[in-house]
Image 1: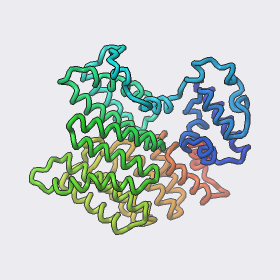
Image 2: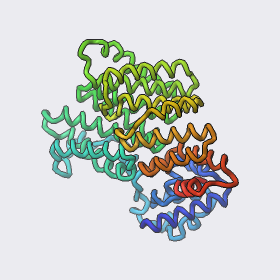
Image 3: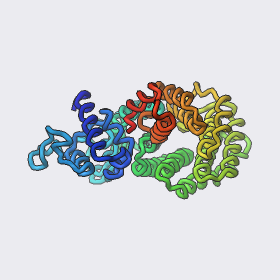
Length: 411
């Protein structure tokens, strides 16, 4: 499916959905997919090739497959490869399915030469670069290529290389967990985080285990499993709290403990617990002050700036728009990744929306879109605030907001 074909297909799905009187969230629920996925399909950035997915779309819309895609073959007419062809996101999910290197258990030799360690190091770093840029489609394709290779390599490489390979495997799965969480696929994120945790333990790197728990907690939060998210974060905090009081505590440990406190702050904010939220923000501020700089240990981007970004986020979650905007005025996020900057601007937009400031909220969203368009077009919070702003401004919706809604396929 070419780009123009994907856009035409997406427009057809949008029209069929509206004819059926369904919101994007309704179609997502009917298919067992995320609203973000539906949005991507309707915008033509998520191609749909597999007949099974086309059939699921048709069933959810209560139409025939031919109405969804006129050139689609019936199940009886389809060639075998048409039934297995996968789009990027499905490919990444498939990469996590089953045993990652079953042939190795039966002493089957690798089909290709094992790349050198330096190659794996570079590819894992590239994956994190894509993640921090919110380049999700490219990231998915990249990880599909990395994960099978590193799983095979760790089972066939010389013994002296395996410790580092396990560590790289943990980092690769952490990227997968982070990307799945951001794309609303928390079930896959949990699997990736669990594999990262196991790989980190085999590497003998307890801090990587904690970093994997950090990813796992975010996956549980995305699933609205707050008790499990809190357990994952607290299990790390209970061990690390005493360690950071020792003289000469490494900054990496301060970063991880600080990041876990930010997780707990978000959990408590979403549960409406102001006291506990502010306690965890205060603890994170204390740890960030000890660091004295913005860092990116274990790709958490923990430091003074990220703490204040989370202070804005938790204030918005608690409905304290005034506090959120007051803190936001003191934040300069330009040193952080595009993903972090855009999330900060999204929360600024949410705070303005709570105050019914349509123009200011729209401006913040447009600035965030310029940084990470995929994230703003797909993130469920961005889509919610766009809908809220449209409702606040009807019947005279400002043209920039209307155009943003169109680009995000909010409807």
